[in-house]
Every structure is written in C-alpha cells, then in structure tokens.
Image 1 (cartoon, one colour):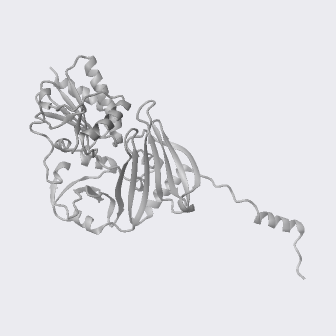
Image 2 (cartoon, one colour):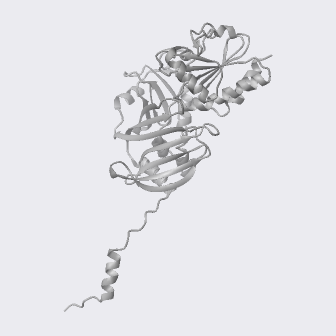
Image 3 (tube, helix red, strand yellow):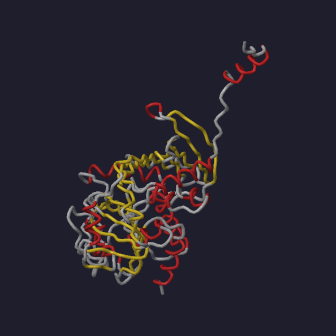
Length: 400
C-alpha cells in the first residue's frame, strides 16, 4: 500500500499551485533592445507609417510613408506620388515616384546615419522622417535606440517609465516613456513580437507655448518589398547631382527673383519684390501644418528684431504656402488668427498655389536670402538651431 503524503506536504503543494503569478517587471532599456533585435532578425518587412501632426492653431496634418527592408535592401522608403528611395550596399538611391520606372536618380553614400543621408539628399526640400523601426534596426546600443525617437526636433532623450498595458483588441503592449528637455515620447511595443506598434510625441516650441503633438502608427503590410519599384531603381538611368533635377528641373536659382512675384499680402496689396531692391531680403516659406516651421518662424522674427534694433536695412517677409486654401478670402482670417496666436507681426505674403515657392526649389520650412542686387545668395531648408546666427552672418556680409 503506497504511503500517503502528509498533510504538511499537501498544503505545501497546494500553496505552489495557487501562489500568485510574479509581478510583471518592465525594463525600458531591455524593451528597446528587444525591439532592435526583433527588426534585425526579420528577413524582410514592408509596412506603412501613419503620422498625424497637430500644430496649435492649425488643422491636423496627416501623412503616410511606406517603408521596409529586404531583398538586399537595408532600407526602403516611399512617399506615395512624390519620392521613393532605397539603400543597398551602403548607397542611397533617390528617385521621383511617378508611377513608372524612374528616368533619373540621385545616388550618394548612405553612411551610418540614414536620416542624415536623406536630409543631405533632399537639400532642404522637406525630407521625410526615417520611420523609427528602420532606425532601431540599424541602432548600435541603448543610446542609438533611445535617440531613434527624436524626430529631428526633440533634444536628447532619456528613459522614463515603463509599463504593461492592454492595447487594441485586448492585445498586450509595453509602453516606454522617453523624456527630453523640450518634450516626451510614449512608445508602444507588441508584448509578443517586441515590434513597435506606434508612439505619441509632444514637442514644446517655446516657453509657455502649447506643444506640437504627433500620433504615429506602424502597420505591417507584407514581408516582401514592391519589386517593380526596386527593379526600377536598379535600372541604368541618368544620374543627377541635385534633388531638384529628379523631375527634370534645374537647380533652383531664379535669374530675376525680385521681379513681380504675383503674390498679394494679407491686407490684399500686391507684394512687389522688385521694390525691395537695394537691401537684403529674407523670405521665410512656411505652412501652419509644418512643425519645423513653427520652430523656425521665431528665429526669423528675432532676426528681424535684431536688424531693427541695429538700424540695419533688412526686409524679412513671411510667405505662407502649400496650405491648400481655395482663395485669399479663405486664407486671410485663418492666417491672421495663427499669426496673432504666435505673436508674429512680420509682413506676410500669400502663395496660394505654391508656384512662387517652387521657384526656389520647394521644401518646408525654407529660408531664402536675397542680396540687395536681387541674387539668391543662400537657402536654408528644414529646422536648423543655428539659423538665426547664420542669417546674421549672411546679412552682415551683404551690407556695406
């Protein structure tokens, strides 16, 4: 007859069976590292990145980018209807996305910093953000993984809180908070695959100002990149040296930039650029939906105040563009409301169809410096923390 267990042994076994599960331990650095490894271990990925950016005082701005890797390509990005690019064997290839095989490509070294390479290739013409999954895949250590979420505008990020949540449809996610001196990011990772599902960001644009917010979602589409596009990029085609030549254009240097612009100001008056000859002119192209514009506008406003204080003859003009307004009458109250909110009182011209903007190459924000003789002497594309100092130096060089 088998020996029965003692009461003490039975109670001990029951205590093991019904013991509470150990509490979930959340480690932000480990979560980022697991995500980076997960992307590196994937053979291929094709996904979409959905961005919804809200600039205070402006309508929400949605944008979608396709991205992925595989098939010998370490990175693939496509802005539908605009541009497509891929990285293969350390070379970045960029072409216009016309729906057909490209006739021209811009090729350069990709280097270790993909975002920097794309920014350089676009030459200030509104380069897209590299989706964070691609940056995580290329990261080398915790610091790279953290800074992958900076979105160009945030200062250095540090780790904050980490917690496990119930995501959409009850799927568990791990949320990691990243903090900077001018904002924060809440990143969400699938608890099973460790892949990034999306993140929310808040970016302060000035003391006491409401932040720019962004909601980003990553949606996998398949494990194969669009072969027709990649094959087109690999075909023997014409190679160009400048971004603006991709669609057949020439580098943006208008021969007579100060002739009649065809624009009108917010108060309905013709904006006669030729009447500004004899003094340096700074044109600041911007749109309300553009977060980097929100950071650049105060810099040119300070530049204008510096010129006034020092008695320097400098014309600083804001040019609103790419907003999609149907008419000047529709644009005027919306822009006046935004400029009042932003405490900006600089002269403002309306470029409703974007044609004047395109004369200088496009891209937002875009700062164009024109000499007293009417020559374009400098262009600054994108947000640059040193913009104000650069403009001061350029203005001094143009004055006697």
